[in-house]
Image 1 (cartoon, rainbow, N blue to C red):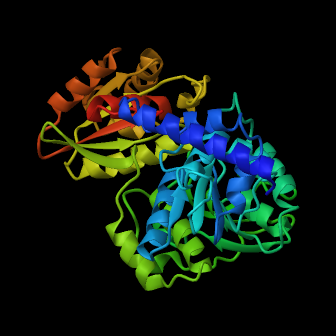
Image 2 (cartoon, helix red, strand yellow):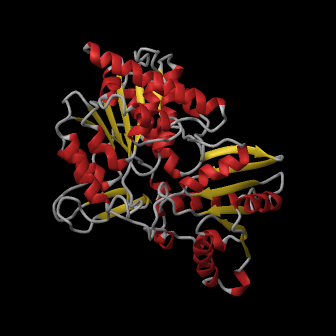
Length: 448
């Protein structure tokens, strides 16, 4: 690094740390984006310079669902082994958020002190990021339809990923979800070392393929895939009768592994983080110990106690995510431990401005179990209408759901809390910006 680069790096770091301190002292939030945005103006190669300094390597976590939870679990595993880890823990997964996370682990002259950097990455910026970052591990969790107004369909994202990953070093380890046909096929085209995780538990098969399914056609020849069983959306055990494409062999047995949190989707998150840890030469026993003690990331099955009531926040921002959330919530409702659910739908930039995806969500099972459904958010009435249609499909004698519409989010939260007993858990199901608002109201702290 020449003298000019060092001066510019030092200036960028100084500005970032000053902004971070100011935001936190003023109580404006976690300063997870703004420092990176401003510091990059002082040094355009800042991200590259920081990534090069990570001692043991950068781990990129990409995919539609599960990035924050998987990243936090992996970070916890590494920290339990006494490694120093840089991590964009607030979920700020665009370039500015990644830079901010790395800057937080530098000293005043820009020297990075982390052994590993775990960066959860928005799926749409993977090609851009890989121009400035040569990762040690790239972990692909899944690909679902998500914010079609921004990303397009999953096959287009997969093609961009393949083009971007192809030139990476042969030493880069690629870890993919074999249950996702698109990712399994992607891995079979790569020249790097590829490892696969997935489920081998037929008892977890769904009774039928859900409405919100994306990739039931062979990514090699386009012929309909034959599924032995489906775990969620299009993730399952499959093969193509026409060209012979099939699910890649797994590098671990999911039946041997414990699980973090609730829901089948969190079993995938556990396996993903666990396989990465094993590739980093960490033994199973300490991995399992961490898994059993793990606490949720904010908004991702995060549990809070508010006014003596138990609250669980379940971020749901696309059809697959919300279907799995409903599945998990219903399992708890069937045990009599929950009677009230608050759904908050926003249509801001972080959420995606097209909310038509809610009509791909199978809300009927949630409505069928009855109880209190409180609705709020910028698109309160869109969500209320979706639930009303589900309600109208039920016979009158089975219609035990109470639909409550509250445009004001604070009023909606208070209403939902009042309807929840101390023996129950209130489930809040928000989109991304709604989740930040909900947490801001419940905890008094926002995220910038």
